[in-house]
Length: 317
Image 1 (tube, rainbow, N blue to C red):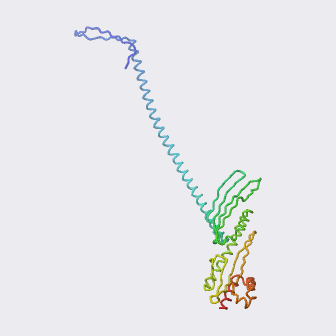
Image 2 (cartoon, rainbow, N blue to C red; image 1 turned 120 degrees about the vertical axis):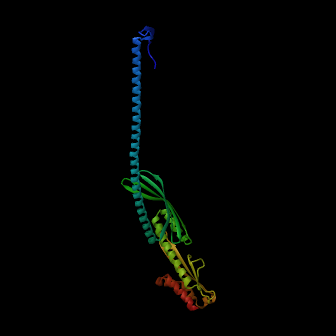
Image 3 (cartoon, one colour; image 1 turned 60 degrees about the horizontal axis):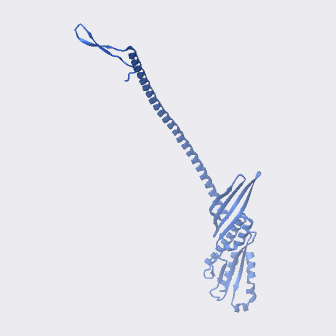
């Protein structure tokens, strides 16, 4: 402890009754009062410092407690918010699954009705604004044994209160042994941008091809010794030959024409190949056989007419 001021101490000996010398201390009064004041001030400062330290410690505890409470409170809010968001997300997923199931059922029903199966569908947004939307679509699928890929753009424009849609940049690729007969209508559709015409024509064309295939397959299985399919059951040709009549054969040529308007016109012709000796015996019968066959087609239909031709060869045997 430092003393501010001076303390004058004068030592002199006083005589007491026992003749013992003791020192007598004389203190400067002003210096003594200054030292006491300093000591009191130091004590007060130390007391205030201790009080401030205690208050700081209390405030730190309160701060930690407050931060803990706030953290727990907002943490609970976060947990509750997460639970609510999770419930909402589950509801959205449930609705989405329901919509997907409905779409799958509708797609399956459409497939059963029109025979067209879509295996892949891609949509890409190229341009989007308040008044214009351009999306690129790519569809891949098949109808019976004929596969296809269609790529096109749909442009939506907002004009006043009306929404205008237009198909642009249409490209169609069709793959299949019998699909060469539909190439003309594909070019026509790409020019007119008529997707409805393409799918309508494709459905009808493939149904006719499937009918021809099943018919040829039926007669091949029923008359294996007489009926041959040189290019398979999906081609246009079916040969009828008698094992006993050498050189005599009949050919069923079943073509499927497609007009530019999408109309399907099956055309079935009978072609005969006979030896010269047979032609000289009865030329008129052989020459008029294709016409007779056309009359049978108009009356009996394709299956019954072909059956009659095959049975005629059997009777000849």
